[in-house]
Each structure stands twice: as C-alpha cells, then as structure tokens.
Image (tube, rainbow, N blue to C red; front, side, top):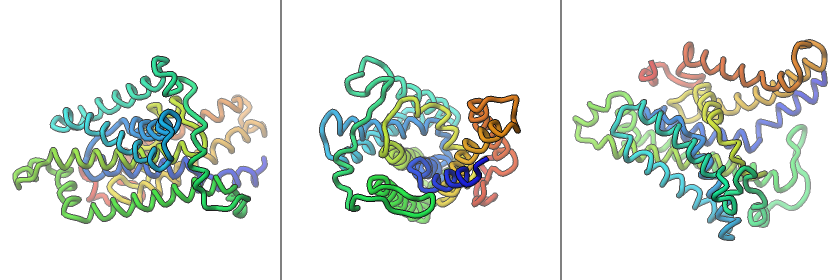
Length: 326
C-alpha cells in the first residue's frame, strides 16, 4: 500500500471546502438542536436551498456572486419561517418529521424536469464561477506546501470559507452568551418554566430556526463553490453525516461542530483510501474496491449509534449541558 499517498490525501481533507461546509452546517444544527432543542432532520434541505439559490441567481439572473450568496441565505431564512410557523408549537418529534419530509420535497423540486431550465434537473448546475473567480485577490499561481498545495482559485474558496466559518462561530458564541442565548437554553431545558417567566418561547425557537438555517445554507454555498450543484448530494444521508459530525464534537457547544466535522472528514477520506488499498493488497479478498469504499458508510452508521449510546455529549460537550438528550 502507498501509505504516503493515503496520508497525503487524508491530510488534504483538513482544508477542503467539504470540511468547511460541513462545519457550517453542523454549527447551524448546533443552534437548532444543541441550544434550542429543535430536532431538525432536514439540514440537507437548508444546504440545498443555499447552494441552488446561489447558483440560480448567477446563471438565471446574472447577479454578482456576493449578491447571489445573500439571496441564497435569504431563501434559507424564508424556508425556515415556512417550516417553523406551523410546527414549532407542536412537540419536537413533529418538527423532525416535517423537516425530513421538507428536505426531501426540496430535493425533488430541484430534481424534477418541470424546472429543468432553471435547476438543471438531474444534471444540476455548473459554470457559475466566473464572477467569484474574477474577484479573487490572489495572483495566479500555485501556493502551499506538502498536501496543501492549491492554485489561486482553490485558495480563494478556502479562505472565503474559513472567513465565513469564523464569522458564524463568533456570532453564535456571542449570542449564546447573551440574554437571548440564555433564554434559548432555558427553553431547551424546560419550556414551560420559561413561558411562566413571560417569555415568548415560540418566537425564540423561530429565531433559532432561522439563524441555524442561514448558517447551514452558508455551508451549502461553500460546499458548492469549487465545483457544481447536484441534487444527488442533498439526500437524507447528508443530514445523517452532519448529525454525526455534530454529535462527535458536541451538540451544545460552539467549537464542537468544527472539531466533529474535521474528524469526520479526515476519517472519511482515510477510509475511502485505506479500505480499497486493503482490497488491492489482498487483505480483504472477499470484497471489491467499490464494496470496500461503501463499507465506510456502514462504519459511519455504527459510529453514530455508539455516539448516541455512550457519548451523547460529544468530545467537547458537558454532560450537564445536554441532559435533554437522555
């Protein structure tokens, strides 16, 4: 086995747009679930709306990339309002059912041939990079060292992604230490007690749903910046992967989603290189390389179950902070 290539590919995933996109999505989910106690099982829908809103705004309306990004975030906030207004007064499990169904409806709408000229249907959307790359302040060339060698456009995607992630982390960190955040955590622990104090629990939960949805949509935009937007990406398994990253790092934390996303993608990349290499080396003769690559998803599922059972607070979480999970 070529261990150097395996570890090089694994290390390169640390700065990948996918890792940054997952970190943003997991942070948005932390606002929903970790701080507000909202069981959002449709985070893929928010990511899809952000990505499609960005791409459609450029390809169909010829808008600059920064305005297209704002439109994608605005569309996600409207989507959160549509979801939250009729459901947030119900029990949490109803929200889980509605969000997972809504995310699938969104994906199918983008997939249908009725809107093929706008959404690209099964082919998705591509070729929307011109205005973004034209704004790149980095001179043309290749920069970096070791496994982190990229051209100017690739670095521009990563730098913008890291800036977006830093802003999102700062906003969430400040909000959760404000009176608004303390009320939100109180609603998570005992909504009736917060209502008895005269607080409008519905309004706080709706605001949290919008905030987390916008952050997740930003993750969808960063995820789609370097390549294309495809409806096959925003499936239910994407939501489960984001949940895995969140629970791995710690749901009721600000930096836990970042750590969880980093570990998740490093392990995913390592296994996607290591398992097929085992087949090629004859260690797993009963499997093909394609089957070995699929095996990593089974391992992710097992890991998610073990996390929920034995370490629901995550690596950075506090057991006292996440009592509502039990």
